[in-house]
Image (cartoon, rainbow, N blue to C red; front, side, top):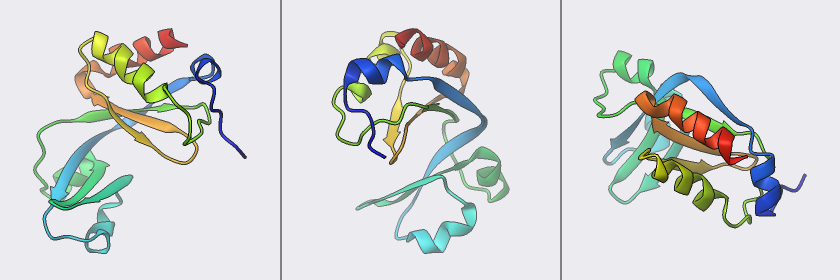
Length: 131
């Protein structure tokens, strides 16, 4: 199944949905994913400075992992192509106008935006208005 590439179609079908859980971003110097898979991260990225994991806030608290910020995940339900141009810019631009940071991750089927928990409702409304 091929994702949508045309920006106008993507924006018309964006259908943002916010999950109930809160997430944190944590980094682990010298770690590999296998070392920390028990934390059940929903995303990971290996950088030269360390392994970044996105994990549920409650998991981080239970494991006594320090964090600075809490985020809610808003998932765009449209099946966007990884070759699409402009969706990330449109989403981040709308949120930037509202003063909301947007940590955007593209997966195979959907794009996911992590926004500060205290601005999540405002972010969701802004994204709904975008469509």
